[in-house]
Each structure stands twice: as structure tokens, then as C-alpha cells.
Length: 414
Ligand SMILES: *Cc1c(COP(=O)(O)O)cnc(C)c1O
Image (cartoon, rainbow, N blue to C red; front, top):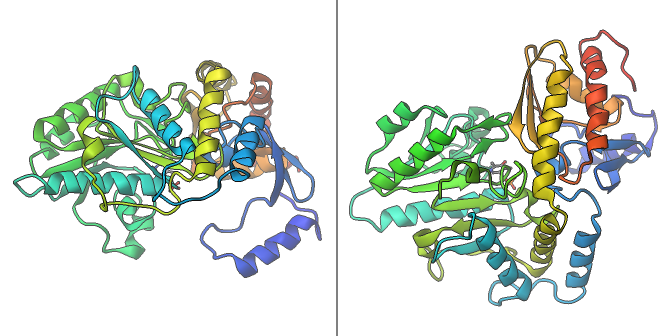
């Protein structure tokens, strides 16, 4: 990537470095505006955004339905705290109960609205613990999967696989054990009545778009139920139409005890949900959990606009069909070293034989694409669900040259 010497981006970079804590490394771009699936940097260059704010901007930038919902709500009633109910909050909780399971959530299901994926998982972990602690025998163990990502608070972080993320902050919440994904015998061996709960991502997003087998999800459901433990489906990234279904776990037909949502929910506004299905909806009582901002009317109004637009614009079908044809087109390119194109809907992983993914990201930036590498060999695409087939095709057409540039076989297009 090159930036115009003395350009606006360079000046912002220097100010960023002087004022913002260094937790994210050097920002890849300074972005100032966007529309649909495109964003524009401080020097006026436009990019096709195939990361979508990390699987967040499902309606893209500046979608009129979100703009209208947020503008009208902030001008009507902004923040009130959870001492009070508001129509957008109640409407959203009801809507989530309709879509969280095919045919609607089971009787007794209830929603807790939070602000981030981390907080939604923290709420689920508290429900798992409270449920376990209300039983007769001790249940100190919580199961999670290798390569899992559940967030960065000390509870959610304890459930997150990467040692690099966890170790500087230990001791974390105790009792978490990691199991290999899709290994049913390992799960059978680990499961007993000392287990309080198990966390799974139906598609592991941060791990590079790794799918859990339907058989494995069924085994997780049956085994947790047989010992009285709760099963949590972390759908923060895989849920809300990302995989071409309302929730990624729907394909398997299992019904978890808890489902957590965040990223796509607010169309860019920070809002999340921890949904307790059936009995898990009433484990928490008054005073046991809380949040100041969670479910605030402005973010809830944005989420309602997102869910309504998904339905009115048939985005479920669009995400499923475009995702399938795009993966086929990417495979058909026969790019040397591109070992696998995987994923579901518009959550796509491209696995390379060599460690060129970060260099493809840089080459992409030079050529007008926002891309993301989840590992040295893996690219993840998680674009807005409003991405058109023509926009997707511009990336397909560009990929062979981006790979050549990444390998130093062709000059950087920037
Ligand atoms: C992003 C993510 C989280 C954390 O969400 P934040 O909003 O960043 O706190 C948790 N789980 C999964 C599966 C995620 O992809």
C-alpha cells in the first residue's frame, strides 16, 4: 500500500499514534465516508469493502432504512436506562424470539440486550454458572473449542483459544477446558456431570471460517442435555443471515439453550443479544445482571430496521445464492496455491498453501479492496449482504493479479 506523501491519511496516522492506545497496530486506512459496499479514505480513494466492519455492516454503509431509524429515534427518545422499557427494545426482543429458531423460540424464552459480542457471551457464561450453581453437585467445568473466539473480557477471554490473547491477563475465569472441534469421541470423553456448559461457534469465524459438522452439533446437544449442562451457540459472527440462514445452527436442526448475537444486529450500531431458550430464559432474576446502555432505543431501532430490511429485501436468499455462486467462481479461477474456498453464505474462507494472505490484503488495498487475513494462509470475506453479484465479480476478476503481486511476480497496482 502506498499513501500520498503529505496526504490527509498520513497526517491522521500521526495524530492517531499520538492519541489512541496501541492495541490495534497501525491502522490500514483512514476512512471518512461510505455508501453501500464501498468506503472512501481520507485521500479520496474508494474501496470495495469485503470485510464489512468485520461481518457487521450487513446493509452496508448509509443504508436509508438504518439512517432513518436512527435519526428518527434519536430525535424522539435517546437513552433512558433499563429502569424503563421502550417500544424499540420490546419490539426487538420479540423479533429475535421469532427468528432465533425456525418456527419461533420455545415457550419461556427471553432476551437480554447488551452492547457487544463479548458482553452477550459474558451474559451466557453467567447464566451457565448460575444454572450450575443452583444444582446439587458442583459443576466447575466449562467446555470450549480449540481455535474458538468468544471475546476479550476476562470471562469471554477465558473461553478464547489463542494463548497470546489470554496469557498476559491470567488468572482468568477458571474451569475452562478446550476440546478439538468436530471430534465426537473427545467430547464424549470430556462430558460428565461436572460440566456446567459448553460454548460453540457453529462456524468459527476468527479461526478462518471453519464449519462445525452437523453430527458434532448434534452430539454436543445430546451430551450436554444428558448431563444437565447448557449448550451455548455463539452466533455473534455466524448468525443474522451471514451464512444464508437466520442462524448458522439452523442447518443442523439443533436447539441450543443459549444463542448470542452481536456483529450484524445493529447494522453498524453497537447492540448485542443473549437469548435464553426455554428454561435458560429465566435463570437470571432481578439484580443478577445489568447494563446501562444495553438495548437503548437508538440501537434497538437500528436493529429493528436491519431485521425488517432483511425480510423486505429477501437478503436471506441473496446471501445464500450469491455466496454459493461466488465460491464456485473463486474455485473455478484455478489460482495457483489456492488450496480451498470454504464457508457458507457470505462468510467465506480462502485457504492458501503459502503464507501470502497478509500480502494479498496489502495488494488488495492498492487495487481498491478492503480484505482481511485471519492467519498467514487464510483470507476471510465477510462483506455487506447487500453486495451485488457484479461487485463480487470485480474481486474474482482481480484475485489472480493480487496473488501474483503478493508473490512479487507483478508490480503493486498502487
Ligand atoms: C467478534 C466476536 C465476538 C466478540 O464480539 P465483540 O463485539 O468484539 O465483543 C465473540 N464471538 C464471536 C464468534 C465473534 O466473532
